[in-house]
Amino acid sequence: MAALARLILILFVVLTVIYVSLSLYSRSKRRARLERTWDNGVATGDNDAIAAEGLEDFVTEYFADPSRGANAIDREGFIKAGLADYDDSLRRKLILGVYVVPILLIGTIIYFTNFN
Amino acid sequence: MWDIIKWTFWITIWVLVAAFLHYTLPQNDIVRITDTYEKRVDFGENSLFWAHPQTGETQNTVNRDVFFIQAIKPNGRPMVYRNEDTGWGWPPYFKFDTTNLQTQAADLKSTKANPQWVAMKHYGWRNEFFTIFPNAVHARPVAGPDVRIIPWTAISVLLVLGCVVLAIWSRWRKFRAKRVDPMLDDMEQGWDETSAKASRWWNSWKGPRG
Image 1: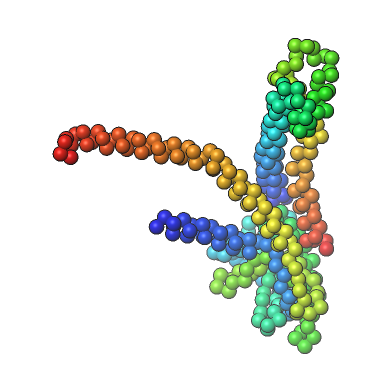
Image 2: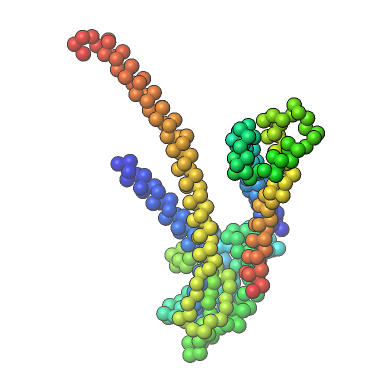
């Protein structure tokens, strides 16, 4: 069982490193998209540019939200709200698949090596 | 001269990588099993090439009994495999059913007159000089010695590895062009300027004749 514990420890460390890197990378890409949406689309009023980044749903929701108040419509607030929206999203939760895939792979290998 | 050193370095690296992959990835041999036996092995200099005791037994012993499978290849030459658990360790075959495999191999024994050909999936090398044996992973009966077996596992592992290497390499190249090369150019320029200043200072001491 010591060998199993060692394998689990190594897998956990490596997968956590991969998960954290992937998570940060994904979040930074979303931030860049939000910045581009604001700079090219919202600030200039160009709806095609907003559509090009694919975040129209969030943009309409953000500007329609009455609780924001007229003074809250600024670049920082927009990006902050966009990232909060991303934090709750399915896409972010899917990155946890990084832990699931190797376990499934090991299970498959065990099946084919020992029981087939 | 630096080119030769660079080439030698990279070729050595790739040869080592290729050797490692050739050792670790599974291969299929078609053989005729003649006998199976168990022998006490005392691990010495070649202990790197042996695997693990059965899962659940005492690990890291200096010697233990190891299963072997003797076989003859279609060209008449012998090939001997060992049959050991890899358990949760390296290589990641997660092989726990060594004793079962030994039983199956014993069941597939045959004679020269009435051969039963077996596809022996294994990894590792056979080297008489170091007394190392490939580790048998799976044995299944096949119709004859000329059956064609496609190594799907090895192919898929190599493809995935190739994609990973390509991804890393292309990103490294872009990173290098964007960040490292301009910095190196700046450094070189700075060095040239400093060196020119030093020359002028030195020449100022040497006087008009120097």
